[in-house]
Length: 205
Image (cartoon, rainbow, N blue to C red; front, side, top):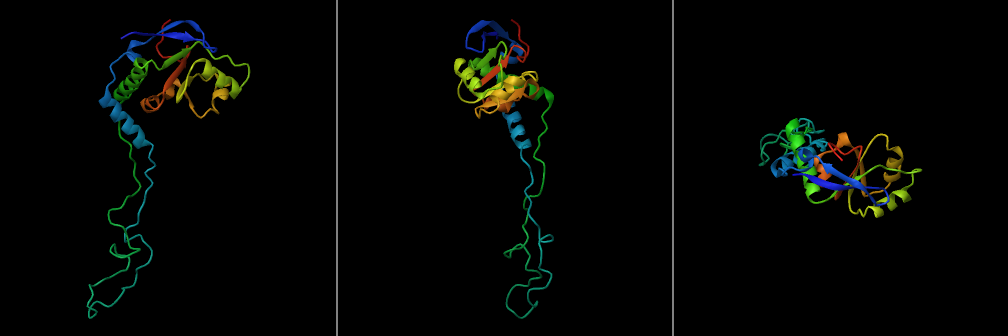
């Protein structure tokens, strides 16, 4: 499916049109793959540092709490056994990695599905280029107003867009990424995707 969007200028005007790559922005989103990849991304962000001590690791409990026989109570060898307060934890969490292996083909399909979802929702904006005389957050706010963008905005910038990056980076609603950092989860968390002619993958005028 071919999608054409207006090529916007910084002041909100139109400087032509751009055809989005059908292989990236025109496929039917694969929800099953999206779910797997997003779940894997969230799992990879977990630190996996939770740690509990077993009865062998908890401090204390070296002495037998009371004699073996004659007390009428069950025999005990340590007050650090799991049934005691302050004792070891049975089958508690240990440091581990939650990472799940996702192959390149699935990652790419999920990325294309997320991009296509935003394109079908008409949430993709392409700007010809950023033209900031100096880094100013106030100018960045004006640009968003000119482009009529609200909510969470993901901007795909080039390394050479230093002035634009410094203008937008203080806005809490804007996430700045490079094209190589695009991923399905962040795209789905954003209301708008903003590219420039330079950073739009596979574009043809």
